[in-house]
Image (cartoon, rainbow, N blue to C red; front, side, top):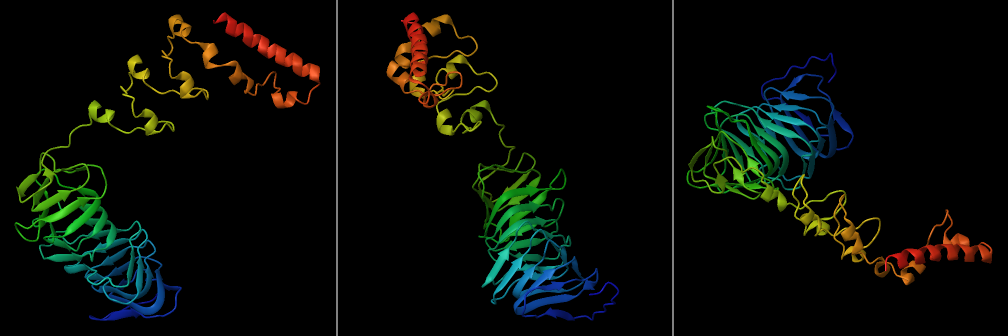
Length: 378
């Protein structure tokens, strides 16, 4: 629409984008839209600016739609349900659902390619009227529930599920028997304003599963008929209310990380693999000599086999320790003969191109020095 265009809509009016070619764009120039349907077989559409409806349904049922990081404000229903081939790419878009009834509808996902990317979907309506988010078993990026009396159905996957309904009356409801898998689970509950989650059927739990190995830690929640699984524990905090029917939740703050816990951590430092450190007990910031004595050390290219009998005391290496080193046995004459030695910048390869007498003098110098060194340490 042109910037200077006047747009008047009637109740029940629908704008249809039914093109069957790709490369189409949608520009609203800030005009408030009513219902929109995108249903062109093979058609491709890309939003160019924010799209706001009041009121109206956003219905995507055919073709390709790229929301292009734009914000869509939908006061009634955002629907992707259907069976025709369609691809929805959300990019970094923010989808704001502020209606009642069915806010998001993915009842039928046949032939749907859903790309959530880094998008955020927010359900904002705070009225006590019932609302439904039909996830259709899809994978979403971030979903924020700041409204009230919202039911999530389907076995869905979320990067972040933010329960920001602190102080609401009814809270967030999960369909009994469903499973929501989350990488991050957060809340905005506070003293006197608990964030609420519960099942749609009293006594029949819904499940929350952590997709990552970390702890889930929240506080100031009211939790009922919820089964928590996965991760390193689900901690509801000391200020949450354990209503009834909960499994897998611990209603305390998570334990602090102790030295014992750290000693069992697999550490990778400066490229040193865990295998090299697997037998080392590390006392942070205070490494004892006894701990260092069991470390397999590789220094300046010397192999462990050459150092396996040596006890090394860093900084304070004593004469008695040095006297136990049998240098001649560690570096044999045969081993020395295989080394490419640089003397004054000349390698043996370079020496081979020199006159015969020069090579003989260089070898006499090197082996003479080695002989005096080894005889001194017998």
